[in-house]
Length: 390
Image (cartoon, rainbow, N blue to C red; front, side, top):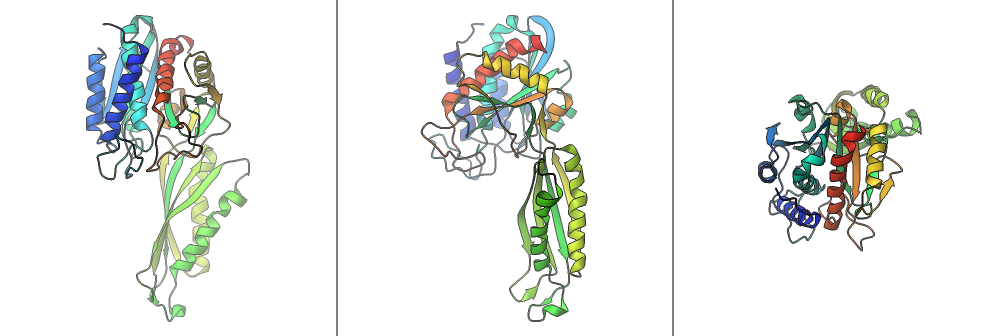
């Protein structure tokens, strides 16, 4: 097999990215994307198989015995209507690749195609994991449960995620906490309905819920060590029937983000204590439901420094920087990083000339496709060098 040059692979990556972007698919419905991945892996001579419905795993066995490195990309889009203005914008109403997963998939596929004819240079094995449903309900955990870390056993896992606030082509790394956990909660305040002209005869749940919204913010400001990071945000309030009716039930819903496993474990009790106390003080009651989501992504320090060192020695990147702080967004790569040493990298994709680019999950999100070559080069260099250093 003739080894493709880097420029040819770059062109392929941009084409794949645009094709995937034009026809985005939601979690566990990535049928066209999975088929594209399978087709291109087969053309490169890399055997692949399905895992967790629409997930695809390709295995490249190196020419020399050694350890196994897992490289991961996510494939799913978001239920967001696209307003980016790109000529290859989504043709699927209400669905858009607003988080860069189209770029992640194309970059990893490009690395696989470039590496396949060079397998004799590879020590150990490279598993290319194309994961479904990162945006929800989560594809990493079912892939792991289906044995993606076995046969052969995976020794380390690395992923790259685009970030529009980093300059184009720059690789960002950070040892330790990288992304926060993401848990959801619902609190139902239960009172007694009645006529709005006679509030004394009922128990109005709307002002109780309003007081609860304010009081919950004191968890971060007064109960948690200021050196710890926690975000508690209320995203929904639902209550009432019409303007002249006392609401007998009001529900608030929100999310909790943090990095500490101990702090995370304490949050349900904190919510129940505060909600129960405020409801009781006003003659109401409450029901608190707490849904555990993705755990925090914690980059393995040793692995991350090895990865950063390889990136710093990789030509053609736009630069390599240590990120000053983690971000409060969540990523289900956390499950891979819990099971084996893991490292999540960021890739700068800020479009040229934009001082305030649209952020991830925005309908206006765009990225600089010239940055994709940095992601491909990084994946390739890690595949060639990292298994020897693990």
